[in-house]
Amino acid sequence: MIKQPVIWGLFSLIIFTMGGCAEYVAPHPEEIVGQRVKDRWLALIEGRLETAYEYESPEYKELYPFADYRKTIHGVGKWQKTEVEDVECIKEKCVASIKIYAKIQLGMGFEAVESDARAKENWIHHSTSGQWYHISDH
Figure 1 (tube, rainbow, N blue to C red):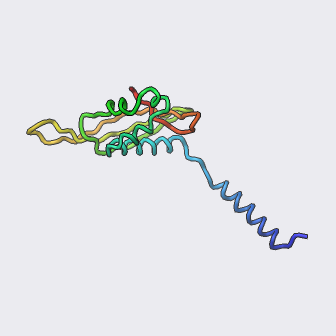
Figure 2: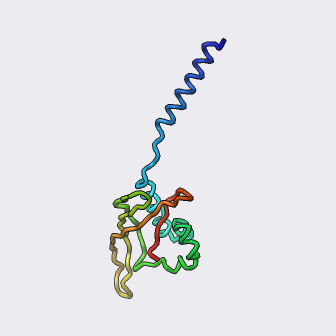
Figure 3: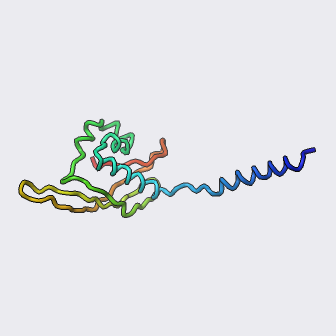
């Protein structure tokens, strides 16, 4: 015969386990991609190109080694920050709308100008790894 405290202990363990499962909610693709966009752009702004390269799809990295990727990273000024304005996902593809802030040096004798521009980035869910990757226009 099982004693009352053991039954209550098992019952409490089952309830606790079920409660933990009920509280876990997987993040939506929009949230995941939004964070990856922020992280990728932070790496670009800080000049950590190796880190930014890791956000490219495995297929991209097979075609373009890091040395080729590095040659594609350029802008008209120094990136200051970015804001993710929106992420829209349909099935395995997301489009992130971002605002990029930059400081542009016009030339000798001119002060730097601060500017912003909007851009859209494509992201795709990789079925093998389960990760979201940036799709370059390259």
